[in-house]
Length: 300
Length: 300
Image (cartoon, rainbow over all chains, first blue to last red):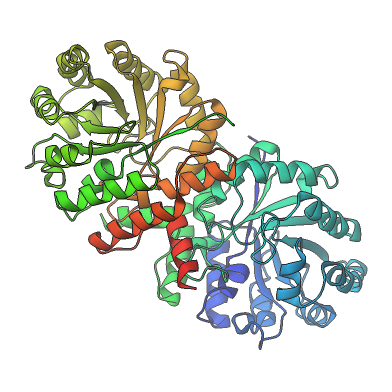
């Protein structure tokens, strides 16, 4: 467990995109700069989707341009199609993320096409990105359950993950989008996928809807996975259970890793400050246990 | 992981004792009956401490007498000394719990004596209980860290646990009182203690102050531990970080176990109803992730 773990901070994108209150580009930039200050080196900062569909991500080009001046840091943006790719490239993106679902029900409801069609849609995007020297990260959603189809077979996850990998993604992140996974299932899934795609190229993107995320991450770490997606403050609720918890909180992940002797390079005090700042803007308390506890201690 | 796990529900004692608002005996009785209805078979229902010191636990004799009519169920009460033992016995207690700290700082601050003195104080209590045919459970607090002394050596935990075991406790529960443990430390600790006391007689009593409890429990289960203390709704804050999370929530534990194929016999719907009822009395939302998510889904 002593080797390096890489944290991919997704708060400014996956987090804020699922918060009701849209946040201005200026505030998002300040949030990202705070996260950089806290020592997070890989940050997903925006999404080039239709502002009508997701108003929270409007002006992602502005955000990317403003923050992308830290050498050695990686700023990712989500891209849904070729149009989005054009915009991302124009804004200077060096890493983009594409996404597919492991379940047909979610694919249909979310992007109105089959899983196979969605992957097909990304073929030209990935090809162009590779030709342009832009790295592509893949996401697979609903890897441990689907709000429409219920159980999702590991073989379906393996299939989609392998396709994204074969197309040229340098890393594929496995999303427990509705947070229904439990440790042994997470472990079995990673083992199954790692038979086709190297474990070091798999990300764990687990939501904390039912409080299981950290236990699932620990199980995954034991299995050999080394990439964790998380969001400062546990930003981003669950559209399928409004009011529930969203992404696993970066603070809680860092606390676990540091406690296990895995150095993250993250300054917890700065991270909690970043979390508190954005929580203030959103008008609510951070949902992360660590931020709550450290804030409580600070109040005395 | 397929063998039985036993849940010790501590909400009515460790939970409510750490809530600011004292709750009437009637309400505590109704809460316990709801927990019984939900399928929890081992419940810590009260404490025979001075009502001046802990007003939340006043009338625990009344509570115990009212609920102790379910054959096959176990209702535990905490006992701090011989006086408390007398009262517990008079109320018909069949299982009592005694406690010691693994750290000197906590022992001094909490019960104003050394660890050795506190154990000495329990010698006559345990002797009398055994002579009276009353089972004794032991608690060791601060097993993964102390609010006064900081780090706690596993050897100190092993020492206190073994003493309680040797005195005749049928089970000793290891308390991460301030929730600072992380999975590998929890695992190493259990391994160390199990060298002296059988693993099946060790309980895991982990608080969720920093969100680590479920991950720590999973690590402990992998190590072979099979007894989990938890509180419905995650009741009971942390006196050392007011506003932070308390005991790990029974709902979250049950969700994890059932997801791993470990049958708990707990009816989740009834359990969340019990949690909601007591949360209403306390005038706050349940802190458990599962209750939040299921309540959100129920609201639609």
